[in-house]
Length: 457
Image (cartoon, rainbow, N blue to C red; front, side, top):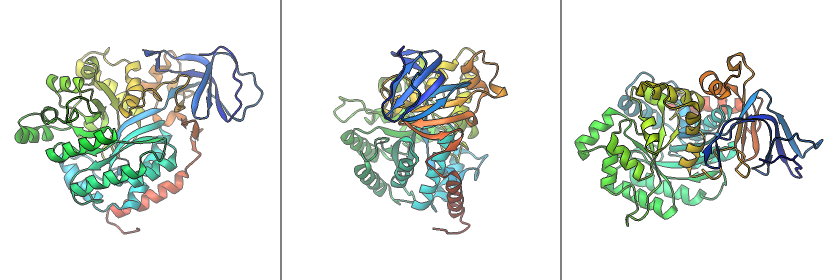
């Protein structure tokens, strides 16, 4: 942190009167810093100063963050963005019933236009709740790319590979389509990175799992897969493999390259029903867990032992899952549930303190994406993915502990400003790059197609 005034000479954003949470500083957990000024310039946090900003004007914008909390942009580590169109269509159902008899039936009517509309609606929702980066697994990856690119958000897109999806019909074609899109779009946007997403061990057979993993090796891609989400899945794995999905994946060599020299970057969504042996496999293979507490609770799929994972050194990031099961993308609310669940699970209110919970949605999420050296903290030189949360409301006062007020008293609706890559996407709750009402209207029409009411394509 500098102690002299800024002298910006190009387009900049100056956030003044900032109480900000670095999250991490020099690799160590950091506390809230009060009354600072943060200069964002050309997409980067250029300077942080405790001295007042003395220049009378800048080539850019000034934001007064008084009575607010400035945070690194939040990371939603597991989503299926077009599922915004399926919000509320199937509640109070078991996972297997929900998935096989409702969601995949509806998605069989989804075309490119509907996928784009759902993705755009998800982008609007995430901007408004302070999410600046996310990890997504879905088909129609080209349409997701177009939506994210237009929105201004940062993403890791992992085209989904499984059988009978509406875009590709067969798993072979789904894999080929994933490779096509990645080959065409990789490197086309500095904000959008790529992975690949074999759906789960119960939907993708061994040979295909290994082919997907070897393609990931060739392209240096992370692999995003659903793991040990439900008791139904665990029972199926026991019958078919004689062991848990994680033990099965280790047995077939999924976690390292075929020469067993390099670990693959594996992102495991859910990981609810894991034992100590599973966690040891996860730890030694450096798997990142994508924890979805509200979705798991709503589907009665248990509570992941996140505090145990963190204690063992496993990286855990937080996600919402898709809106068909959550039913929103409000990551702050998932943080609240996550910390309370761990206290309950361990019968210890000291488990998962506030500072650790915040890391799930910031630096741990950045680590899952592979951008821990670029985002996830507020530090000079990091990319300017920053949010400002309004703490003026009655529910956020008095400010004895502003981080406590953030997690235990605030909501996503308190996010005032969202900045990604040095660009203001929302300020004072108003979107700057997208027309919110037009996106909502487009999504409503698209959802009617999925419901089979009419074809507006």
